[in-house]
Picture 1 (tube, rainbow, N blue to C red):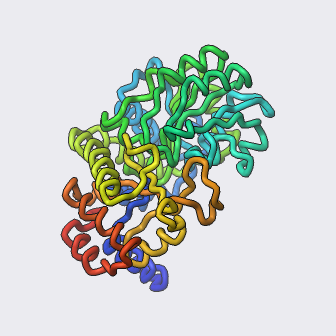
Picture 2 (picture 1 turned 60 degrees about the horizontal axis):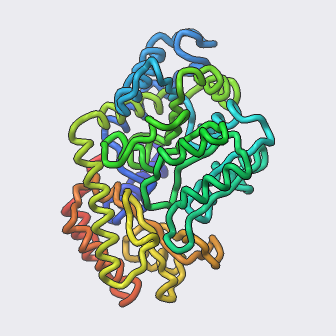
Picture 3 (picture 1 turned 30 degrees about the vertical axis):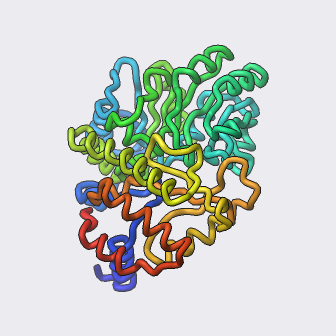
Length: 404
């Protein structure tokens, strides 16, 4: 690279990733094929519009790429092209969710979504997000005693508030969602049912957890995280909603799509359709369960008592340690997590009571149950015993190198 400054920063980041344990559940390692597509000549092309209906010339190859990505998306999630449509142009998850609301819900109407501090996402209607200003959020949370969703409580809330759309999905909820129960609730109040599966899309593709598609009207997802693709997004919807959704994406919120990103997504979707990806997805869940169980053995309180997915929440303040402090201590030793609120948290989001962690990246590096036990003990050693485990972590990372 001629730009030595950026070239050196890339080298520094490469070393950082190689020599640390990345336990952030929304991060992963893409293949060389995905990186090749992202850095390809497709980054040069402007392709405003959709296949066969572009506003610029010279898009015959781009049309093939986008159509291939659509086909692979439907195949990866085992969907009928007669019943389902997919838009692969959203730049990321937030504008994808925004496009769904704009296409289907009149401004000012109600969207029922999970509270941010209970595990939901900003774009599920939180007040600091534009979605919470353009639409009115009907927030739902978890049961205080179980720290899990209470579907009877959700049904009563929906009947009382009559939302136009119900969103299921999370960024910090470690349990599976009963999509069937939420479908019934949505039908009761004549609402659209949308699932934001950004965090667990790879687990659905890999058949490690139940699929939302038999129940949802719309499914949005980012293409990174457990799906192990580039940083983009997709919107799946029932065929009768396709026109409204496509129009909301373009020209509603976006101009020309990032064709290199779509090409990278197509590569990742082909990888996700392979048998090896199923093994990966199942191992992600198993690793998370083992990590949670071992941390419990060491005396840590795991929110909701465990995990069914790729992530877990630890109540560090139960041992008198704020989440921010725990995160900082771990990072200094090469363990990367993020501070996170826990249900009914009384502390500030900037220094909450917990930390969030997940297993997608470590699983991509080839780590399994044995390593998860070891990682749990290192986490405990750093936070409680103030051990320096940098050398141990570097040795473990060297044994399981990053293979992008």
